[in-house]
Image (tube, rainbow, N blue to C red; front, side):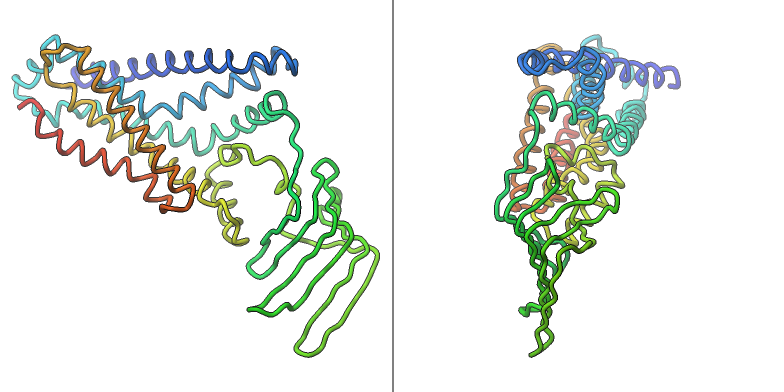
Length: 358
């Protein structure tokens, strides 16, 4: 069995690498045809296109499609083994079906751990370079266009800006309010706020501080004041695919910061976090289903089983996108949305298990 295990293990990994390489190459070709006009118009150098963009796009897509490519690889490989009656011979020799799947799960576990480490710590760093390239040469220079901006920057602290210029990191008509219950306790009003990169603080100009303590109200005025806020200039920068640029540690910190502020839009970041943990398990689940649907020799031949594999893969993608989209709008808990496809396909796998060769 050791020779058989090694044979299946190596063949599985080789098939997976081949499928990943082919699909990723196709994605890159399609991506290039879509962006060639942007490249011609904004004229990035060849080195920037190759090394800043595509060198970082390849691992991103390879890791993103990895669970589904594992499924396709398993179906393709196992269906070919079944067509040559190799599986019948193995099972007839006294090997149980579960024992036959052991090398599949060994390879799937290796792939799952690898993809988790990549998406948790390696790919986010590559994404920063890739997304910075996209912002510069594809999407164009970003200008913050928000007007009458209301922000919750702490549990009881609210900020307001009439407008903000992200090129100079200055805001007009800034106010900061501290509220306890329904009572306003303190309010800072200023004509302008500006970020000081040397001090790493905000400076407010022509300010008035109004403090309320019971029936007592005091006013304090000044021309310039340095103040420390949890608000940062990065909060006004482009958030285009920002969640993909965080390592797992940074993502957890950012989610904690959003929760502290009581900010909206936290669902997108929670979906990203839970997806990073769910994908390795989806590799194992899809491997099991792939073996089950393709292990029996079919009258329709290998083509029918591969078509069935693609159909199930498409159903998985559709299910995941649907549940994630609902969660992003706040209509479903992100944790449930991310794990629902895995739970559903686990049940499908248990039902299909009844059809395995005996």
